[in-house]
Image (tube, rainbow, N blue to C red; front, side):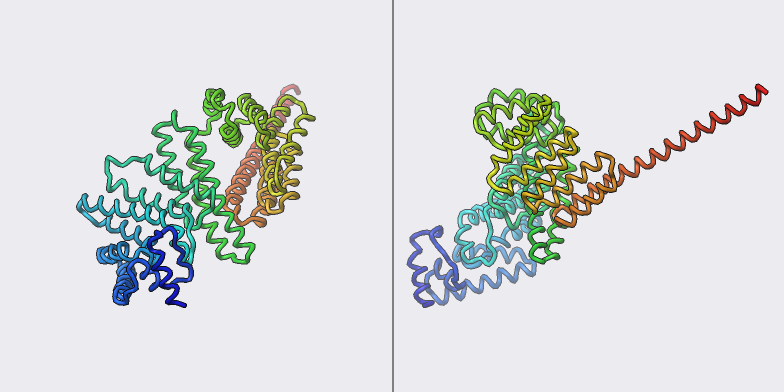
Amino acid sequence: MKKLTLLALIAMTAAGAMAQNFEGSTVDERIAYSTGNNEDTIKTAKGYITMFQQTGTNKDYQDMYVNYKWLKKHAPFAVNGIYTQGPFMFYNLINTEQDPAKKRMYFDEMMELFELRQKNLDVLNSFAKTKSTLGDVLSVKAEYYNWTAPTVLGKDFDLRKSYKNFSEAIKMVNEQGGREITGTFLQTFFLVSDAIYKAMPNTTREQYLQDYLDSKDACEKMLQLAKEAQANGDNEKAAKLVETYDAPLAAIEYTFSQSGAADSSQIIAIYTKKFDDYKSDIAKLNSAINLMAVNDCDDSDIYYRYAEAAYAIEPTYTSAIGLAQKAQKDSDMGKMLDYYNKALELASSDNSRGIICLRICNALTKSTQYTGALTYAEKAIGYNPDLTGKANLNMATIYALLGQYPKAIEHCDKAREADIALSGEVERRKANIQKVQANQAANEKARKEYDNYIARQKAEEAFWSGGAKK
């Protein structure tokens, strides 16, 4: 059977690597695919594999490079380590090399290796123990480029190239998920975007806003894996995921908050100018609606105009919520409820309806309709119990705005208990609530002390005034 499998692999050589499926194959069979069924050649290749792995363990990157070159040329499908360990080898070679020409040679070869891995990803996945997505590969490529390109390229380094690598990876991860993408990657991507925004704020603000949403979304998707791990009883993995992704998420949010990009007047000005260009493009309209909504511009006339234009082309829950907010501002509560209900009707599942309820909750909270906001937070849980943590976090915010701090803290604790992925955000929110509570208590104490002081002064004045009259 093995002989037949080997012969079949060799026979398919002419079909090209992309047609291969090495599932269940041995190292010998994969070497034979590229080198022919020659026992001496197979033995030689296995020796190179052993030395490639050993020199990597010994951090002897020059010798590791020699073995890498042979394997890449003669047995490119022998082991996945060629592609997963190769970039780290090049990174170290670049850092220790003094000759600029050799640095550039290593850099170019490293980029070529990434492109080869992208091209042959399906083939490599067919025998890999752990499968990778294109997003995984692109994210690693982006990081290695960002780490090495400034040193290699010097003044010719273009931050926009680094940005392109990161944004492509983020897009892939958001579309198809990812395994190897790290919190540091997401954080670095946003720092690159932040640097570009600071250099060209007038022309890159809109993209920067979208980058914030994309990187935050990717980070939250990875944190969601912590919740899944906890549900499967793997608390250690869940805690590790939170540790890995919560800090970068906090850094992304802090960097964005310090950027000034979320200035509502600037955002409104941008989308006011773009309305005529966007008004017939449903994708651009919905994107603009979302961006304005998360940046506190959802009570502006231009936000309502975008919602009306989008709803006229193709009603979605996003535009329906926008029209509900406009009706609320116009004090038409009946129409407001109609549009909110329409938003729920446009959802395709109860899971989606739960998410929409949280959107409605946020909208009502911003307009100080706290009773309605709490109602929709509860509805979100009813539609989708998986949203219990997020709904409780929303309720914590509402109770804090109402000045009911103990109740707000209680809901923070419920949110953390229900969703480990929110634990970092919950602690930050809880700390802010406790700080406001402490400040208010201090202010209240100071006010009472001042009132008592005034009362004592008045009593003293009355006493002396009364004594003088006598």
